[in-house]
Amino acid sequence: MVVVRGFFVPQTPIYKKEYMQKRTLVSDSVKHVGEVIALQGWVATKRDHGKVTFIDLRDRSGIIQCVGYKMLGDVTPESVVELVGLVKERPTKMVNTDLATGSVELEVQSYTILNKSTELPIQVSEDGINENEEVRLRYRYLDLRRERMQDTIRLRSKFIREVREALYTHDFVEIETPMLTKSTKEGSRDFVVASRLQPGKFYALPQSPQQYKQLLMTAGFERYFQVARCVRDEDLRADRGFEFTQLDLEMSFVGQQDVMDTIENTVKTAVNAVGGKLQTETFPVFTYEETMKKYGADRFDLRSEEEKKDGTLAFAWVIKFPFFKKVDKTDAAEVRDGKSGWTFTHNPFSAPLPEFLEDHMAGKNIENILTSQYDLICNGYEVGGGSVRAHKAEELMQTFKIMGYSEAEVEDSVGHMLAAFKVGTPPHGGIALGIDRLVMLLTQQQSLKEAIAFPMTSSGKTAVMDAPAHITEEQLKELHIRIVEK
Ligand code: ASP
Image 1: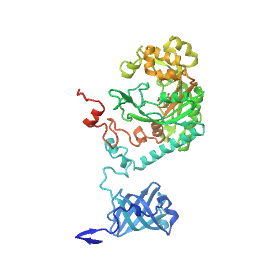
Image 2: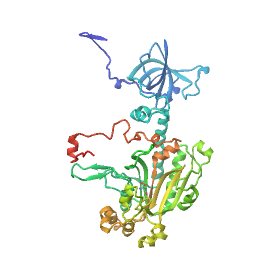
Image 3: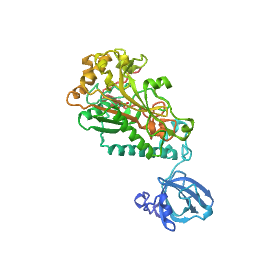
Image 4: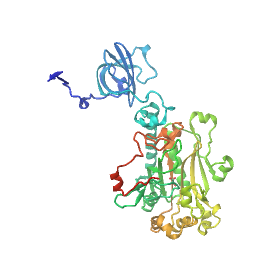
């Protein structure tokens, strides 16, 4: 220390980042017995025994025990530190078989606190399963440090990577579609975004990339996929927020079986790669009629009690759904979409099964028309769904006519699709898989929120940040919006 006019000035700079030592990962420490190495990470636990202080240091690769003699007293749990020290073999009877690094420990020679942690609002060493959701999500960055959450989010990343690689090997092209778009009919309420430059006009956030992915088939890509974010203003449930992620794909020159085979193989490859257990090598196929008779629902659980315990995934397909249903008068979106009293069951862009095309075009026997929709079920949940699409303008037009739209209204709503369907759109079909749900099932958890890094609270508040929030008068003015009190 030097003293300048009564102040102590540290001679080493306070910001030591550029002086950090060359890092060794905790998991590699066992390869450096007898050497001095530098480890950087978090203080998982600290045990003070007077002259000796033990620290379990955690980084992305693992945990190691570190010992300091007459030092480390000022280190607090969950602080970020750099420890420089000698890797020592532990005596045989002291080996900790629970740790991959249990045969060694680091005898600390010097250390730097890179970021000192204050007292923690939640305990990282606990699994947090029964902890208050608001608290967990307010401090999600700490919650995510928990081993269970680290494992889940890392498995999610690996699963998506495996899916991507499987699709790339089959000639798929990954393409992003717009986030600011026009309302797409997926049967939910839209989230809207005000336009600053065009007063009184609004964009809608995508409920799914449905229409754009079909337009990519018109554009000649033939095989598209995207890990797509979708936003739907649906009533919140305990385990569901407004946003979700789906693996979205579309293929040209295919029928129902081709899309089902592609997705079945992709799912099997990715599930196996992350260590998931499949009940059957081939997913059984049921018709909607069969499942309603047998299970009274179109989602069902095929697992035995034993399989429920060991985390088996029981996939199945459901096909041959009715295309239309009577509007549920309590559902605002259905009332809006189904002007004739009929609305679509799954997707208005689907084609009817070929044997029902004649009735479809004639608007006859509407209640009997079956659609090319296929749903993928797993452990009692719907984890995916798609269909072969109408790719001729008159077929799509007719679907909307059955729902009571005039030609002018159809033009206004999906005129761009009708136009594309008149300039060489190939027959095509696709599907979307719910990534959040699959990861939840793969990691045997009870809530979708456990599978998402920053999910919403049950009351629709964002994790960590306080949204929805007020915006300034100035922002409102710029957007030409005035808030009217109810
Ligand atoms: N767009 C549909 C959905 O998001 C999936 C599909 O038919 O491809 O549910």
